[in-house]
Structure formats: C-alpha cells, structure tokens
Amino acid sequence: MVILTSKQAKEKFGTLVDTARREPVTITKHNRPTVVVISSERYAELEALEDELWLAKAKDAEQKGYLSTEESEAVIQGVLNAGS
Image 1: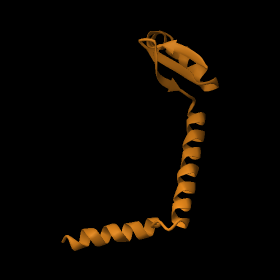
Image 2: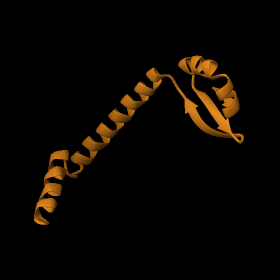
Image 3: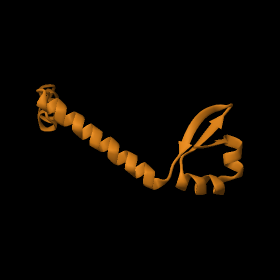
Image 4: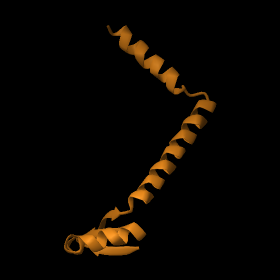
C-alpha cells in the first residue's frame, strides 16, 4: 500500500487518483494514518460485501427467533399508534 502525507496528497492529487485506481493509498496527517483512498470499483465491492454481511446477520437473527423486518415495523407502528 502506498502512503502519502496530506501535504503530498494535496500537491500530487492527480498522482494520488491514478495510484488509488490501482491500489489503496493511505494518507497520513502528523504521522498517523487518517484516510484511505480507494477506487470507486473497490468501494462498490466493499459496499456489496457489507450488504451481504448484514443480510446474512438478519437471516441468522430471524432464524434465532428475532423479529423480521415486517414484524419490527408492525411493532413500531403499534407503539406509535398507541401514543396517538
């Protein structure tokens, strides 16, 4: 992984973008990692993986007896309507 200071990232923004399209670039500030710049394709992959993880967790919770999305919404609506 490439590491740049925030000053280098600012001064060489074009290079930062080109590099981030190929591999993650860590940007540091005061010698501490602050952000990581990645390509939009990699970001989309990570978002899809996160969605899959949350879906798997929701299915697991439902199988263990927790409320489904529809059941949760019904409970919330019931509470809201009871307060009216």
